[in-house]
Length: 90
Image 1 (cartoon, helix red, strand yellow):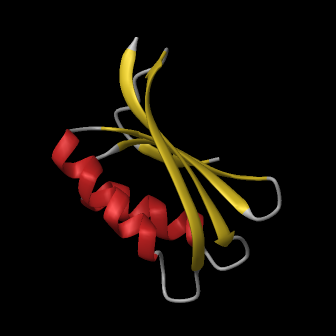
Image 2: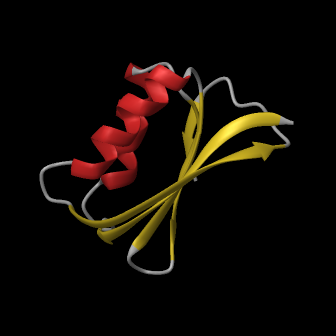
Image 3: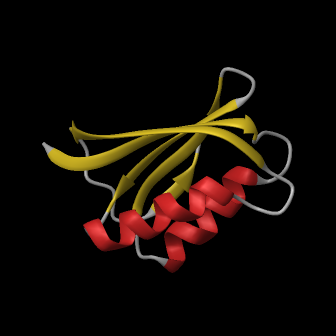
């Protein structure tokens, strides 16, 4: 099992290139994992990397890209069965 950080971002996060922005931020921080849309107004993210880089990513997620309106961010450390060396948009 790989220690991973799982987040769900809620608010105005779909239809504004939020997933693409998350991908760019993760690549810049050398974080592996994935991002995908869920539930109409939420995005689910799995992050794998150093705790320092993940902490930086979490602070960036609270703000999001220019058109985003993040209303809620829930994150937890989890054990995940797959290691991701790169980041992908699902």
